[in-house]
Image (tube, rainbow, N blue to C red):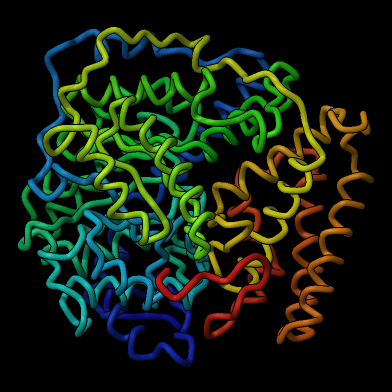
Length: 557
């Protein structure tokens, strides 16, 4: 519907029928006026950074160049004096955050608020499916948490800190138009979160704190800085009260870490490194080049490989040199109920997370709430103090060759099938209104879907041979394997309480996956592709739909 009161060029869809009260809480006249001004002020700059991405990608493709550390900003890297501002006390010790927490999931959100975690990644991005229902429900749940309206949750000053993660720049909000254009997703999320919660969080010493997804350059960090400064002035908050952790999820951003920190030096809560979005970005930027053929992730890609180890070491070194916190990725493993399997899973997570601690990270994330206290104890055993800012890694030198060194290895049939399954089931989850799902003992989200579909696309493009039997990864092979997987799922669904609609949805998901991996040109983000697809848009319901595929989460999750 159209809004007046100075909002005559803003259009907002009516609420889902079951969320009228939440809609009225979030979309007040004042909040819409604020959002209208925010979007109108920065909309052109958002378009500019997205066009710069396209231009940069075209240059890489046409020239065959590789990224390197920027000569134009070398003075920033050479200047030893500058530091980011110290973070508030509640961010000084954040050993373990809960990751992938879509705030529309009220039960899990309240459980997280009650948990001993130091922080919660309140995720409107990778772990969330951005249906209108989910966005409104999630925004309202954050409002309730901040304003202490959940009866069994602790006061916001005592709860784990909320690390609010708006959508990335590639996402739009279909249900709002400003000036005849769909609203940028991150401005929609950020603006409403700040308007309703920013001052309350600040007064309680608990924010406002953010995660910034998929930042590719210091120019994008500068845009966020300008948004922060404008918002603080509008809301009467002190300059520097907003703090943000930037997720370095793109290989190009890895060459601009110092510049990104410099742009956000008054607002920085550090940088974060993760494995799968970052690995997928190599295919995004260099996937046409044979030299950047990424081998089977299930067998040959892990944080011990040179390109990923170097990335983590550079991130930790860069952050600590500038007084910023460095955080690692999320442990996606779910702890099994069986005692022996539980012990094995705990040992596997502990080994990987100890490696990150020894690399100097100040914290990381887990999905399973049962991992919070064991991982906190791991930090206490192997570190001293609130963080590891004293670990400067002066003996580490990372070169462009280190960052761009592809691991050796091939492609296995198991890895191909695994990637197909994750891709199909992720699309199925999105068609169900879910941003993540459970498969083979761990949580999968858009990051793992991104690397899965990217690898399948690249292996088809380069006609890669399987290690197992020398078959070539081709359109026919991927189509046949996809059909086999779907048949297995349909047999499983036939024995359960799933409807014909569930079965049709998994068939549709498989068709959509094949569309993505067989395209001539690589779709930059699977979430953008899905968010603009008619099938997804027409599947949106007034409420959540039960997802299928993989294991069901246990109640404690």
